[in-house]
Length: 184
Length: 283
Ligand SMILES: Nc1ncnc2c1ncn2[C@@H]1O[C@H](COP(=O)(O)OP(=O)(O)OP(=O)(O)O)[C@@H](O)[C@H]1O
Ligand SMILES: [Mg+2]
Image (cartoon, rainbow over all chains, first blue to last red; front, side, top):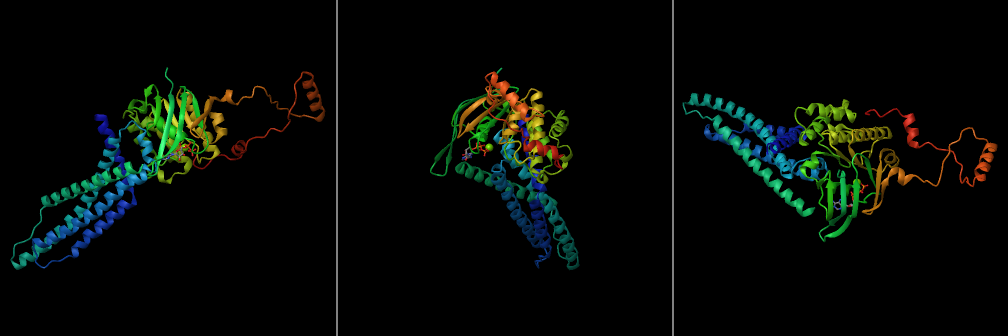
């Protein structure tokens, strides 16, 4: 059991390294970052909680979208290029069960998305914080209550996004596995 | 001791298309690979060599027949730990470096972490890949891909090494190097099974050969037995003159022997190539 866990971890690790080194990952990360940064330009004129929430929704929406693209491409690559290209053949000849292989791939892909989300959400946090400072300054001038966002809330959002993307990977994995058993 | 591989009445049908048309890739094949030898599996394209090897390794399910590998029925985890495999036309993770790949394969094959570094460097050294080991695999030439594939197949010091076309796309100098790696494995008492279309090399490297055609076994035996024509003899003569030749023929005829052909020995293109070329840049 312990060995099995270790093998799964090694597969995850290599899946992670491979994905992170691809240009596609950097490309999507840049796109996501551009999206998050562009949310700075969003201005809603009620100067309050609404605006910060709007920025956050916009940013996390983008993250989920690009994250899903990444999830689908990574998983599809596993089935349609790795298994058909026989990369997997080398691995499946090792003392390794198919469950370990698939679980390892899943965890690796999920970890990649974790990094993706954390980086973008970090950026998003900075954007929100900067806007919050502006709003606080404005609120002090006009005597209204200052708007705030909480780090805990951001953490919750990150976790939510990550779980949702995990579900996306699992679904794509299940569909491709089914498609393969029926086509091969 | 049980043979390294035993295959009994192996048959494999592939279903093609939705109508389920059957294609018989391997047809009632029975074969035994003794331990400690280099065994060559030959045959034309599509005769079922790779399919047979994949079934032996448990990567493809057989339609009928029995497999034994190192005394285990089929490729159990225990058997796989003692087996190394180089698939044909190997594709590996392009973004890993050679060393990372070999290390990863060593870990998956159960090399203890204390021995890991030494095992990885040994395998890289054996495959002459130490220099290029820190480059991403995506930048390798075909010959280097085959050699890193070899390193990944032997890193866990397996008893049985299965190589599917280890010299495909490799230049003659490189394939001579792979031939030496195979000999090195045999010298350590390992069993090596290989497929190749380079018959000249197979003849030099293998102890036994089996020839398949359309999924069936057509010949199996020790290379020396299969190839020697014990009813014919070849002499190589230097400084021959027509007079000497006539005298020699007369002398042979006096004993009832007959000279049927006199030709000049040719060296093979491969030998010539190897004489002229020192080695590929990445060898
Ligand atoms: N996954 C598959 N689905 C359907 N047919 C297959 C499959 N794999 C192999 N075949 C068929 O089985 C036959 C044997 O293939 P195999 O790859 O074993 O040949 P081979 O002897 O290794 O040939 P080569 O020398 O070209 O490598 C071929 O006719 C091939 O088309
Ligand atoms: Mg083949």
